[in-house]
Image (cartoon, rainbow, N blue to C red; front, side):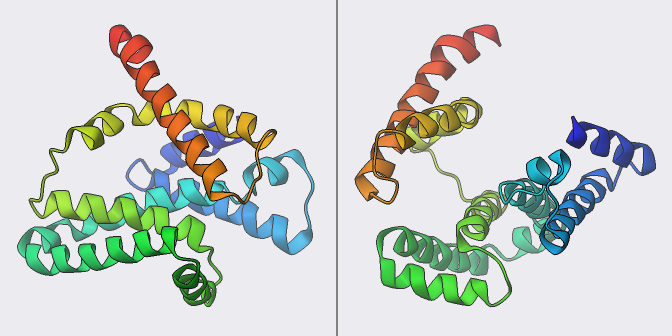
Length: 196
């Protein structure tokens, strides 16, 4: 409820900048929680690290929107930078030594690579699309169509898996992720799509 009130007030203050005003309010709660060890319901629920994904998502949107003209006019450098980032991202996911190095670099500015890298991945994909690069590989298109269903169902499945599997096991994470994708795709085709 708090977020909806904050966003409604932000819209009332300034429609154009409402997402950034809401981000600032959420960021303030996060800082307040950390600085004063706040344990109120607002601090506990909206000062949690998962709120960083929402804030970074909004930052990515504005970065992509403001950088759109540059991206359109310079597709080759964007492609090279995107390939370099994607290679780093895959290396991060598969190689612990690369992960340790990236965590150290990102940690210098007080951020968590597990939160920053997904936001950069989304920005990279948006930049490639803006630069005119298209992906027509059907598994990714299906995953894109089912992304909202994945968003809604993955936490339920991850919590279920967490109770039965080792939390730091790559196999556990892979099984949970693949199961989430299968459930999301089924939910998209059997529930979401027929309702549209």
